[in-house]
Length: 76
Length: 324
Image 1 (tube, rainbow over the protein chains, first blue to last red):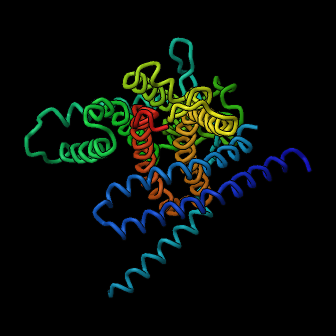
Image 2 (cartoon, rainbow over the protein chains, first blue to last red):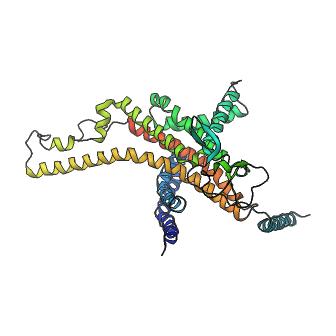
Image 3 (cartoon, helix red, strand yellow):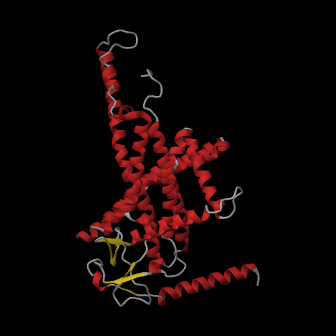
């Protein structure tokens, strides 16, 4: 396998595998937020704000994988 | 025509335009580079100017001029743009007040609010249609080295040349996002030292109490025997390691801020460019819509994470003394 093919394969794997965990994680965060809003609609504003914080943390991990993929494709 | 027939007609026309444009409209393949492209023939004090730097200046001018125009004739009952600005400000300030104690909320508001508006405008500026086509024609692929061959062209480039766009969203430039992240994190440290003092703030990260307590008499005044001492030593070591991990995470937060904003905006840009290259009309519309939303969300996330970390920075490590 030459270097070019290895780079492209590495980029694809980085993005694909790196999105599995955060995908599950964001689902868990959103589900928790929805359940707590259903339980206590008064706090919906606060809960939504905190939900975004949780989503940002988990999404950042997927973004890290994407950045590695981009570096592999366009810089190296 | 009936409503149903009209929708069908529009869809058919759009599809025809789509397919025809794929066949007849040709685009130069844009260079997708992670680093912002340097603009030829321009330099400031000997340093090159990149297109994202130029856009950052434009964004700053927009913000300053906009702020001046909106607040020029402030009314008690707002209307128009003043209303929009107050909408944003009140909501975001409400978020800060919900998180932080009130005297700190006034101190926290400056940097995250400014960064929110700056990031919002710079995210959305990169979505303006047509901006990718305004630029310099250059020889691919090492455009910077062939700068002397660049010339502005409004019609199209010669065969084999690529367009270096004049404008590029500053949030898709790692330099820009890194600086925003550094400013935010350094401000967090400043707030921490301000609230807790040097010893108090450092005591959040370098926690030796647990280990030292193993060698002192316990709460009943008895000297600790071997098993109790070992238990307390283990707890103390864990506390110390958690503190060191927190210290390390202060640095990784900079990386996280940088790459979260950069990754979201750059990925959106690449997606729109590639989609437009493949099918020149209509196909990028859903992506553009998504990018509008993502731009807003990422600005808000940057804001709310800054505020959350500032609030964490000013809380002392042990809320109640003597609990451990």
